[in-house]
Amino acid sequence: MSGWISIHRKIQDHWLWQEKPFDKRSAWIDLLLMANHKDNKFLLGNELIEVKRGSFITSEYKLMDRWGWSKTKVRNFLKLLEDDKMIIKISDRKKTTLTIVNYNDYQISETTKEPLKDYGETTKEPHKNPNNNDNNDNNSLCMYDENFKNIIRLLEKNTGVIPPILIDEIYEYSNVFNLDMFSEATKIAANNKKRTVNYILGILRNWKDNNILTIDDLEALRREKEIERQQKQQNQQYKNKQYNQPKKTKFHNFEQRTDKYSADQLDDIAERKMLEHLERLRNQNAL
Image (cartoon, rainbow, N blue to C red; front, top):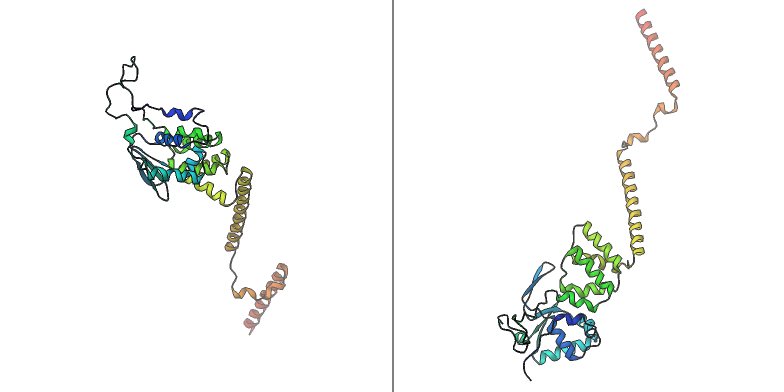
């Protein structure tokens, strides 16, 4: 048997395709559907990543979820495909890149101009390239629950296109935080003018490390910080008041002779002193 058929990527939306677990045949076809039909680039942090035609970025965790397999089964299957020279797997600390060997053998040539002979007698236009997977990552969202889909929509609305390499990490946090918590993290990022997925994930990571998992936890944290802010403000005001008071020298420690008299008594003393002084002057003049 020779020849081939084209399979549209919309098959991934069909209820038959979503039945799990996959068998090896379905998993292999799924890899073909995920591969990029043309060279592509996306920004991962501050690094521009180029993905060639026939390749795509994924992870074992993502394939586990798509296929309903264990991590060991996914790893063994990819190793089997590598040994049979069907794929090339390259992994680093940030991502895993899979490349379909002889990818063009599974696709229509870009230069095809004539209709396929067995396509049908009524076909008048040349067969279109079936490899348009520009929206490949969005198609794969059908494998996730509604909460995760809403989170992805929220992030895309506020940050733009999400790098595929971050999908798994977002999915992990979606199992910890609900949509409201993602929304709060997104607002904080916007207020700080840091509208990036990495910044939002950093906020969520900090909350998780500090066991801030719900809106109630977050509100309690904010109240605590407000109390701390007010306390610091009061302490600063007290310090400023102390600083503005006149400084005492060592001479302020001695008691003044006048401290034991009232104001009226001091006036009487002053008047008496003046009269005594005048009396002395008159006596000197008499001499």
